[in-house]
Structures are given as structure tokens and as C-alpha cells.
Image (cartoon, rainbow, N blue to C red; front, side):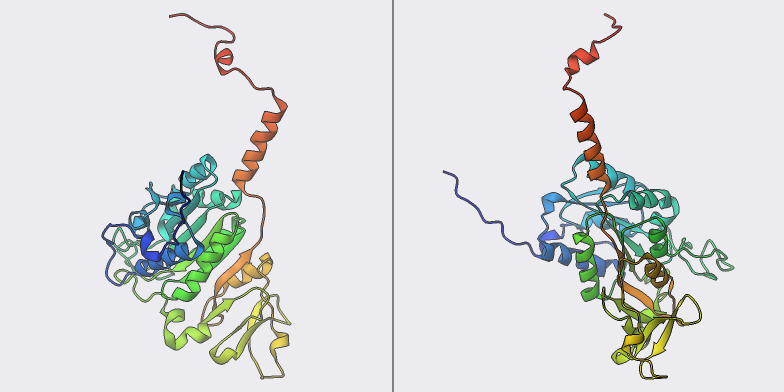
Length: 340
């Protein structure tokens, strides 16, 4: 007689592979790796049901370091491979790991389609505003004036905002985190996993070698309180030291503005409440930049809709119900045949 066995809860270390982690010392990818491993343990994930799929770049080494299934694919094509995996086995828990170069340059087309189709995958885009693996060329998110081997005179390209791109591609879940903010990042990862459909998470990640300190204008401790806002559904858009500042809709223009609580009769009732189901608000939040406005972190936008793989399954079921079962051998031998 078979005795029942109890599945023991896994710890973060159980999701770490035996491979040597080979990122530059001090790279933000280490913190993200630890955050993902902690998130998987917290949600009760099983390695045999979990898949990490990546493209090309520093971030794309991720599958090697996870004790799960993994697939290190080709440049920019991770979303296409992940879509195939999810369609073939919808029960798998599929994560896509990409970077600002891999996901938004050669992979921009594939990223767009996995978002608009709403394939049930988690997409982690590591944004360090540079190509790190190929030694520091400017990327689609690099700021104007960025000096690099490919732009020695300074980049003249208008940078792309990953969160705004995702919203424009009709993503149903868009969030942001910072590599070093482990508590907040962990919560974002868990919420992304809980969402059914394509979850897009932009993670600000420091490249210590080729673009060190590019996010200091809002991540440094001295400015973080005034240049970050952690949004929470149904809560007032408050930030600043001791929650002394907030966001409201400008009475004269259709845009967000910063106000100081207690000045000019402004109190918390005058502030906007975060509504993660409002796309117009999400677009405005994603566009905010310091120093005039804080960077929005947390779940910026979330709505629930039918997923791509479920729609495909429903379509197959409907077609199957209309037609009687067929003999495959008879179908193959139907019509003109030849004997060789």
C-alpha cells in the first residue's frame, strides 16, 4: 500500500542552481535574482512546473541560475518562444527575463505581441539604460546625451519608456520596482504572478560598470523620499518625507502636479486616489520623471481579461464540437494517392 507523502515547502535556496553566478560584482542582477527566488518560495511554486525563458544580454543568463526549467533563446525572441511554451502546456508557470536592449530593440516586435495578446506569462524587463554585455553601447532607453562607444558625442535618440511602451501595447498589468528595494520588489513580483494574463514588470537595475548611478536622481537615499512614489490601489497618491507631499490633477491643465499638504489649504482630500484600473491615470503616472515629478513604483495598471491561450483553447473546443471525430489514417489516404 502506498503511503501518502507530504510536499515540503521550498525555501529560496531551493530555487538556486549549482551554477556559478557570473555577473560583475555589484551588479543589480544579483538582487533581482534573490528577489525572484524569494518570491517563488513565498508563492509555493514548484520547480518542475516553472520555466524561465530569456533572450540575449546580461539579464538573459538568468535561467542558468534557477533550479527550474529554463531556455536561453536568441536575441529578442524570448516572448515568441514563451508563447509557444504556454500554448503547448498552459499549466506551466512561464517567466520571461529580458533587458532594455534585448526586449525593446530587436525584440520590440515580439514584446509588443505577447503583451497585446495577453499571454499568461510574467515579463521581467531589467532596465539599466545601456547594453552591458556588449560593453556599453547606448540602448533604446538611454537618455539624451548618453556618451558611449557607439555615441561618443552623446546620444541624440529620444529614449523609450518601457512602462509607457507596455501600456501602449495594451498590457493589462504594468508595474515597476527597483533592484535594491527588496521588500517592495518582492511584493510586485508576487502580484505579477497572481495576475492572470501578461504581467509586465520594469525593474530599474544598476549597471555598475557601464552606466553606474544612472538612477541616482531618484534612488539615492538623500532624494528617494521626494523623487519616488509607491502607488497602492485605493490609496491617496502621497509621497515625500513623512508623507508631506501628494499628487492631484491640476485645476488648470489636464496633468498631474505636486502639492504640499498644509499649504494653501491643501489636505489629503484634495489628492488623487490611485485607481489601478484607470488607463489614463496609468499613462500619466508612467510618464512622470524627476525632478518635477516623482517616479511611480508599484502596480501602476491592472485589469483582468481573457488570456490568449484560453481563447485558443476555446476556439479549438468549438471547432471540435462542430465536427465528428475523424480517422486520421482515412484522412491521409483520402483522394489521389500513389504507391511507390
